[in-house]
Every structure is written in structure tokens, then in C-alpha cells.
Image 1 (cartoon, rainbow, N blue to C red):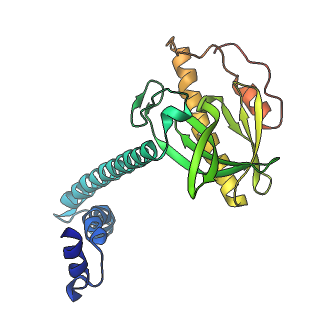
Image 2: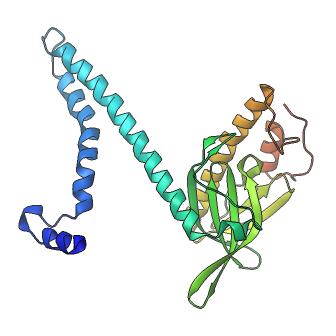
Length: 251
């Protein structure tokens, strides 16, 4: 009945062919426009005008509200994506029986966040892969279409993002460096642009996680399963083409 009601409403000339989603989004968009309107109003309000102080205060408040709305919207979108990925993939199967809850608070980087996902291929064999990047780990699976349904098997165990580096792409190909396993994977994206996007997001996420890890170690916080890490100089050398072999001491 709800769907039938919505279908009838969308045909009403008063809604101007807009769907329900447009009306639900309107209040959020309006909140985000208030700072722009008040900023323009303040610009043309003389400082000696009795309304100047009130307009300035309203601008400050609206800016804070808009920032909070934006933050909450991002949180909600992230939780929706995590829930979608949780139901799409059999994580227990991928991780050899280990149960994994995606929407959780991690010890190192706080709330787990989805970064990007998409198909990749092994550059040498052309094997179809599917990668998912979070702010704390990256999962690479083998993808295969069986009976019209995509099936996924673990290609690599989850790689912690502080153990990742991605070298600058050559057209649609880039090299993913797994520092923990001293391994380099040559991967291809569908386009050169997508390869560049993968490299950017992997390195941005890896750098942040690495910095948080280093700060935790400097503060004397014990980080489980971390025995040693590469120095910034070693990471840069590997990023520029050096072999991922020797680990430095903790720092």
C-alpha cells in the first residue's frame, strides 16, 4: 500500500515529478545553504548597523550546525555502507571461520570507516579480484561468476593499512606493497583514472593509520600483533621502488 501511495503521489502535479527522496533531502540542503545566505547578508550589513552583531552570531551558529549535520550524515552513510558490505559478503567464510563485525570501534583508528571498493585484476594472470578498503584494513578477494551469481574467496588475509603502500600507477596498473609479507602485487583497474584513485586512497589511508600507530608506540601504548614497523625513510624508499625487506625497530 505504501508503494502504491507513493506512486500516486509522484504523479500529482503539485510535487513537480519529484520523488520522496528529494523531499527528504530538502531540509538538509536548506541547513547547508543558511551559512552562505548569512555570510552574504553579513557582507552587506555595516558594522555600525544594529543587526550586525546578531547576523554575525547567526552565521557562527548556522556554520556549527551545518558542520554537525554534515558529520552526522557521513556517519550515517558509513554505517549504511558497512551494513551493506556485512550482508553482501560471507566474512566468516572469507576469514576461515572468524566472525567479523564491520560496524565496530577499532582500538587504533576509532570507528571503522569504509573507504572504497571495486574490481581489480592481477596484472600478470588477469585473474578477477575484488578489493575492499577500510580505514584499518584492506581485504582482497577472488571473484568468480558461478551460475549467474558472483562468488568470493579470500585471495589474501586482511592487510592492516599501516602495512600498505601503493606505488604510482602506470596507466591502469599499480603496485600494491604488503610490507608485513614483503610482497608486491601488480594490479590493474578498469581505467587509468580508477588506478590513480586506488593509489591515492590507499596511501592516504595508510599514512594516517601509520601515523596513529607511531604515536601510540611513542606514547608507550602496546599495540597487539605489532612487533616492528618500517621507518618513514624506509617507507619512502620502498614507495620509490625499493624492495620491502628490512624492518626497522619500533619508534
